[in-house]
Image (cartoon, rainbow, N blue to C red; front, side):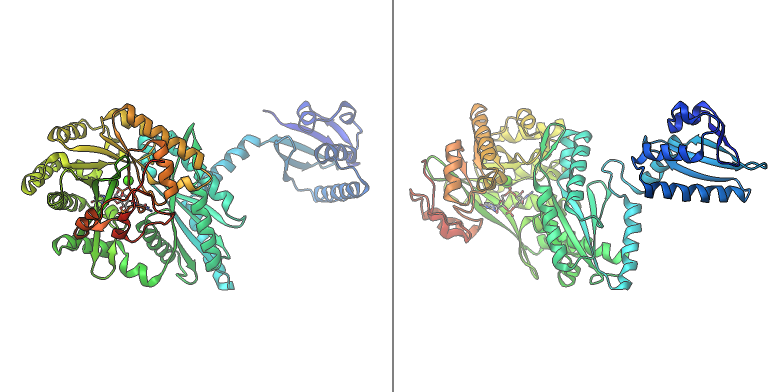
Length: 569
Ligand code: C2E
Ligand code: CA
Ligand code: CA
């Protein structure tokens, strides 16, 4: 690159300069002639860089020159760095001359500086999301902990995206990356300036909320959950995700990093267990006993042996006849200390520990035995976890359950989610076909929550599509028009493919009205009944189906609500 070079005499006037010197400061010819004063060069330069040329500024320049010359007069070389408006970074070396005056050497260090800054930046940031990385998070956490001594407080939010893996697996890493970027952007937008947003790896983020009280932490937690819930546009996909957040407060829940992170993690685990898309503040009493993973896992192992598991049944209603077509079996765990637990609190754990294979097999047998006592042709619907497909003896389990209960296989439905098909394993496809050959019906559950839904519909000839309850829920929100359009499209696609469409999670008469108009064949939701214990099924069936929808009421207490049924508008 070469260097800029200039020489000034003891009177602070230019003796000579080279081309690069003129270029760096973009000096006009009149200011590069010998005899030009340093003052006029500085004045021109400042005006170029800052636009300022007032009396105050000129006084400042005179003071600067005075200091500069005084420093040179001490006879030592010195160096300073200038950042120019153009973005150039210039290192200036001033060498005093024996006879008075000095030489300036300008070196363009823009590239070097940028590289250094980048390296420094990379050491403290996650390059993908441009948020702080684990190192920087650790530094900031230590810093915040030190501040506690001065009476301050802060909150640590531990954030984990729900079902992020599904995006990566179905749409590929570029889409996953785009989603992470969008998530980071929303987090950054939702926090205040002094707060820190960090990506700790994978789909885990953290926020250090500086100076926060419990109330403020709760507010921010809720705001973050809400912000992440809005659909993300990423590489042309409309991606939906949600986040679970565990919050630990300092100093209340810990005064060192390990303790705080551990407690935030326990709270996060409870947020996930409570059904995800929630923020939860650490509570010593609940999080250390009831929810610690290890304890729960040991409990779950015992649950099967000690017959603490139950199946509850929720009716699925024919939208033409208002009759009950089937009952979906939904697992419950009657925990000796914690009461009746919903699957959200233990299925994930059962899947990650492999216990789901045994538990799932139990559910299949139990469901067949229960359903064999119901009047035909009422069906039973069993949920299957992707993990059960990996184990190898699912087919034998199902055949065994049919044989020992004596139920007609045509009265059995199984529900799988798209994640079962994710790996595109020929063995899975073969197994599903074998089940159909037995006479079982196969339903695609939670349709619309994963990301490549349509391609999965084509990859296997499902008998049924269950439209995820989030679309029905959105009928009451600003996204109403979108969700009507989606429900209608899915219902009509199902018709074309000769599949049955089910609307999940209908709670109100208005929602029923909408999904019926959209053309759904079957309805399921609290409006008709919550899931009820097996013993309540006969009563629920004998109550029959009246012809008029109930008023507005949201059904929440099970059997009694079966009185209600929908009709076409
Ligand atoms: P899912 O298969 O989508 O089951 C429907 C869930 O929606 C049930 O939650 C049901 O209680 C709830 N629900 C039904 N109607 C309404 C409504 O109108 N409003 C609202 N807000 N919710 C409604 P539940 O019983 O907590 O089950 C959650 C999930 O756990 C199930 O979602 C299913 O994926 C899984 N699951 C349940 N039982 C089993 C099982 O035996 N095996 C496996 N692998 N998974 C199971
Ligand atoms: Ca289901
Ligand atoms: Ca579902």
